[in-house]
Amino acid sequence: MNRAASLDPARMTGILLSLPAYRHYGHRRRAARQEGHFRRALARMVQEIAANLNAARRLHSPGLDPEREELLETIAGHLAALVKVMARRGAVRLKGDPREVVPHLRLLDSELIMYLEEAWRLSRRFLRPELGAEDVRDLAGNFFALLAALADTAEQRNQLLGLGWESEFGIPPLPGLWREET
Image (tube, rainbow, N blue to C red; front, side):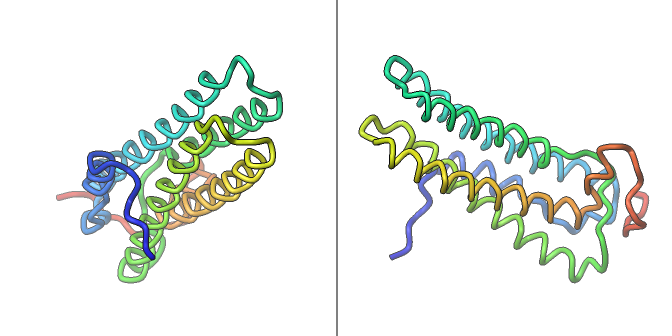
C-alpha cells in the first residue's frame, strides 16, 4: 500500500511550486533566481525538521536521557551541515548537455523532496513520549542513513549545477554550459 504525503498540503505546495523549470538554466541570472527560490524552500523544510527535534528536546527535557539528548544534538548538527551543502553558492553552470542533465536534476529534485518528507516524518516520531531507548537508537540510525542520502543527493545536484565544493572557495568550476541573458 502506498502512503500519501504526510506533510500538510501547504508545505508540499510551497516546495512543489518552487521546483525549477530548468528551461532558463542556460541564463545565469534566471538560473540563480530559480535555484535560490528552490533552495530556500528546501532550507525551510530542513528548519522545520530541526524545529521538530528541538520540540522533542523541550518536551522530554525534564527526563531526557543523555543518550537521546546526544542523538538529537548530533542530528541537529548534521541538519546544519546539510543546509550548508544545499545552500552552496556560485554561478549555475549545467555540467553537460542539458538534454541529459535536466532529467537527472529533476530526478534528484524528486529524491530530495521524498527524503525531506521522510526526515520530517521521522523527526515527528522523536516527539512520542513512549519511545524506549532501543526505539530511539533505531530511529536515530534510520535518521542518520536518511541524512547521508540527503547530503549525497544534494551534492550530486550541486555537481550537475557546477556548484561543487570548489565553489565554496571561489574556484571556478570546469567550463559549464551557460550564456548571458539578452
